[in-house]
Length: 331
Ligand code: SAM
Ligand code: SF4
Image 1 (cartoon, rainbow, N blue to C red):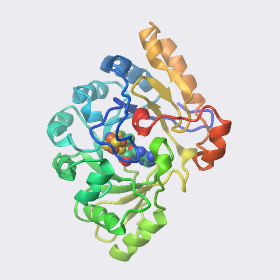
Image 2 (cartoon, protein in one colour):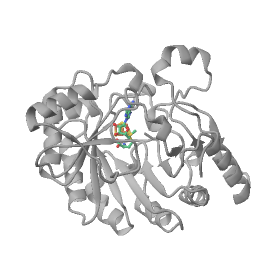
Image 3 (tube, helix red, strand yellow):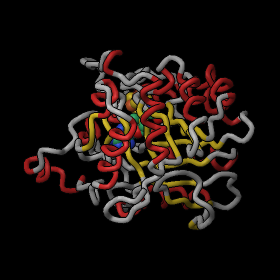
Image 4 (cartoon, rainbow, N blue to C red):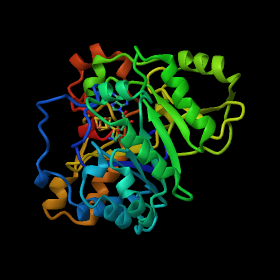
């Protein structure tokens, strides 16, 4: 369906857990994490019901995310349930890749359409530091398992920090040079702990990559995904280089997404906590029609745009600014 600004809303990010097996410095605190209890998290049948109703409202693509979605037991079976919903054309996954190798076959058997793997650096020591203890080799094993899956679209997501070494961007881009994988650089957003970190402007990354690989061209082919990434191609590359720059190249006017948090809260914009508590309705005996009407209202009233760039002023004035960390919302 279309929202009040005429945007076609067709993509839902479904966060299945707020838990994670890593502690990326810009996403999760090292200690003192207060996880949502198991009873508070939506059960698979509840997620399936919300997705079925969402499909009736025009959602055709679902991304499973978290926290780390693969720490939620039985995730491949949820994937299988969602793939059977009429109207759902694609179900994809965003993961840190640590548990991907062991789950890849089952995910593929349940019809996974694409996977995004978050790897911020190919330097083992830096990876350990950014993820607070993660083992890069396991994420790379996950990447290899995904690449070995026939027909699976694979992307790598990197959130470059302001103090990143440009050689990190070159090493990541080399993956797209040699392998059939798109590498995307995602601008840091001031959500949760992300407020404490500065990101890197895409121009700086493009200059570095052009210095190494030659002049880039804007990719004007079919959009390889659900989202707002803008892609470049470099001479001789097997994959593309993408940029998702929510701050410096705002894409709200074409935003097509809504989000379902692990606790079953339907959110229409990353920055605002406005939306609807669907869990209360699911567990309170609401009918599908009642759920549909509430979801329809959330979609219709999706805010025009985020105001992250006005953060300081906004927070004082607007009590609806989202306070949760990225892993609690579903990044
Ligand atoms: N654990 C999975 C993963 O890392 O891919 C899925 C959840 S994670 C929150 C999804 C993506 O959000 C990751 O690529 C992560 O780097 C990104 N992310 C987390 N905090 C962010 C922030 N403040 N700004 C931009 N991206 C962020
Ligand atoms: Fe976990 Fe993903 Fe957040 Fe890193 S970015 S802490 S892997 S949820």
